[in-house]
Amino acid sequence: MAYPPNATRWRALPHTLPAPCTLLVTELRELKDRSRLSLDQLAAATAISRSSWERYLNGKQFPPRQAVRALCEAACEPDGRVLTCWDVADAAWSGRARSAPAGAGPASDVALADPPPRRRSGLVRRALLAASDLVASRPVASAVGVALACAAMVTPAAVVHASRASSVAGARPPICELRDCEGRNPRTTACEDPVTLASHIAADGTRLEIRLSPSCRAGWIRAWPTHAGFRVEISGPDTQPQTAVAATPATDQQVTTTAMIAAPDPSRLRACYHPAGDQPGQECFGVTN
Image 1 (cartoon, rainbow, N blue to C red):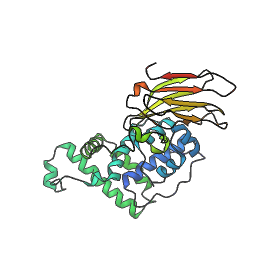
Image 2: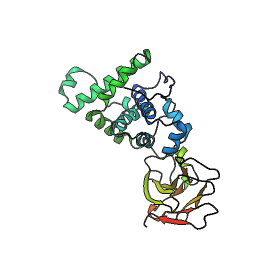
Image 3: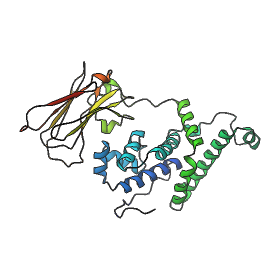
Image 4: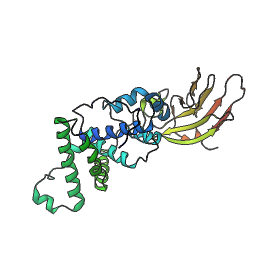
C-alpha cells in the first residue's frame, strides 16, 4: 500500500492494548494519513477536538463510534469495514469478549456439535487471543499480521458475535442527558452518533446545521466557514439558549459549534444566525421548517 509522502510518524502503541484495538487504531491511522489532514484540520472537519484525536490515535482512549464514522467521512472512505472492526474492538476494550457463557469451552466434542455460526465465532475468538499474544511479544514484526487479521475479523460471523455480545451486555450509558448536557461542549463530550435534523445556507454562504445526539437527547449548532463577528444561537422551549461567537478570522474549513442544549422535543429546536456587525439582520430556521 502506498502512503502519502507526508504520512505521520506514529508512536508505538502500548503493548497492553488488546489486539482488536491495535488493529482498529492502525486502521484509523491509515485513514488519517490517506486524508492528508493535519490534526487541527481533522478536528475542524469532524467537530472532535485535536486532543481527543491524539488520544484515540495513540491508543490512550477508545474512540467512540461517532469519531470513527466522522474520520471515514473526512477521508472519503466507506465506513462499513472500519465500523465492523470497531464493534470487535469495543467488545475487547470493554471486556465483553472475555465473558464467555459457562459450558462454551473449546473441547473438540462440543465444537463438533455446534452449528456453523458458533464454530466460526470460536475460531475468531481463538485467532484474536493468538494475535494478542503475538502483539505483546513481537509488536513490530506483528504489524503486518495484524493488518491481515482484519479480513478474519470483518466476517459476518464476527458482526453477529459482536452485536449479540453488545445486546447482552446492554448499551453503555450516555455521557450526559438532557439538562445535564446543557452548556457542555459537544466536541469534548463526544455524545454518540449525532444526526443532522435541519440545515440552512445563509445569504453569505455560511452553512449551518442543527445537530442532535439521540443518546444524550441534546442538540447544538454546527456552522462553517466562520468569520470574525458572526454569531449563532440555538434555542428550545424551557431551555437556556446557547450561543457561539467567532471573534477572529478563520479558515474555510474551521467549524464552530455552540454548547449543547437539552432537546426533550427535538422538533422544537430553533437556530439563528447573526452575520457580522456590518451586515445587519439575522436568519433563523427550525427543524420543522
